[in-house]
Image (tube, rainbow, N blue to C red):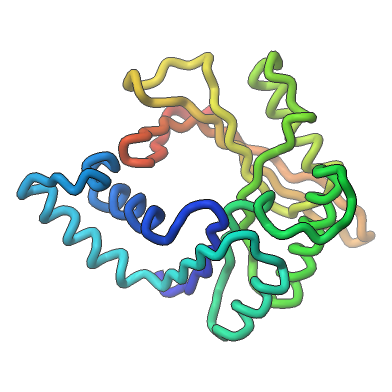
Length: 219
């Protein structure tokens, strides 16, 4: 990929992210990389994966508690960023004196949308939906509908992906989990009104030892 990515990690260090990338690329379990205890074959796989990763146009900034202005200045100074990833939004610096975390997040989201337009690049934001909106006793479909309604009402994104773990389906291995990935979009009609696009649903098998999601089945 020839695109340049600016990845702002507010929770994990550069080293941790690199080790996880190394595990995904090499297919060597993450715990083995952490323990630095490789077989000869794993060593070869890791070296090949490292060479591929170092060729990525990936800039990782692990400065904690950053502001929107910090992101804007960093991207503007680099001059060649194609898109931005923020992991994750709730750890960014507060831009409001409001005590309600949900209201703070809404203001932050809209500021980020404005930033994306000003920089003329997409910004991918990782976020947790506030637990106030989700009842843990809900069925999976009800949870997905509730999240979809929340995102729609807040108007905080034009394209979104929801990732919800599903406990009703059997995993392929005991330590794996099943996740539902839901993609959705909204579009603007000629009269300026906003409408929702068609959602799609995909079940994924999550393999924690390699931090990999693989297709489980289409729904």
